[in-house]
Structure formats: structure tokens, C-alpha cells
Length: 110
Image (cartoon, rainbow, N blue to C red; front, top):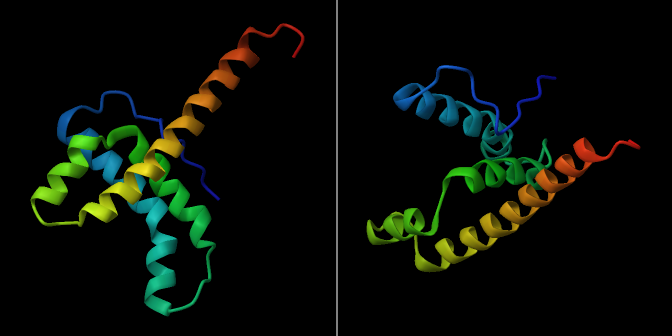
């Protein structure tokens, strides 16, 4: 199985190419959720794959982005609050993982 790191960015990707790459990555993580929804059964663990989508969103989505979606009528305020809570938790986990990785790099005993 191919593993994609959410922070991985091919060299030279800027502008539209970078947007397309990020869209591809989030769709890659969302495919199992779509399959579950289409078949009406949980073939794939929905929590695991939903977490992948939320982790990706945590890199790029901010509060003003969510508020813009609410203002456009694309989502309700309650949905925006729920999503922002998940994004905040994902950002905390990402920060914790970054700090652990940095500590592992600096630790000569490891």
C-alpha cells in the first residue's frame, strides 16, 4: 500500500499545480469514505480515514476559511464549529508529532 505523507510536496509545485496536488491528496484519503457511503456499509474504518482528511485540512484550513463557507451558505455555523474543533485537535497532534520528531533528531542516545 502506498503511504503519502501529508506534508510531502513534490519539488517545483507552485500555484495551480500545488492546489491540484493538495486536492489529489485529500481525495486519496477520502476515497474509502466515498466507498462506504456508496455501498451503505463500513468496508473501511471511517474514523481512520476521516482522521486523514481532517489532518490534511489542519495544514491549510483556517477559521476565516470556515466562516467564508458559512457566509456563502455552504455549511451551517454548527458544522463550522464542529469542524474547527476537529482541526484544532489535529493541529495539536501535528505539533506534538513535530516536537517528538525534533527531539528524536536531537537525542544522541536514540
